[in-house]
Figure 1 (cartoon, one colour):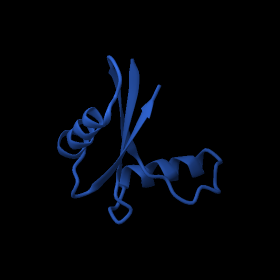
Figure 2 (tube, one colour):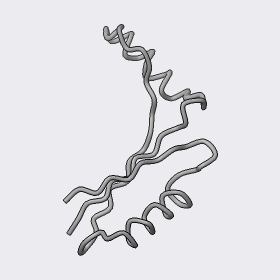
Figure 3 (cartoon, rainbow, N blue to C red):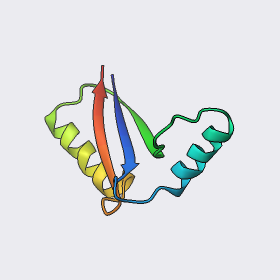
Length: 81
């Protein structure tokens, strides 16, 4: 069994109003030295069996077409044992 984590985040050039709102709230709560906050989403897939190259290619394709919007988001895929 393996865990595959897909992290999806807005591309750096895309404005992030939710991140800005969180940054403002952090300042009001006393954490004033935060330079930037970016929001994202995470998908954790529990896979039966091993994650070979073919399965990893399929997961990357799914991340590109289903889990993210490639126009405005980037993603990373990490396999954990």
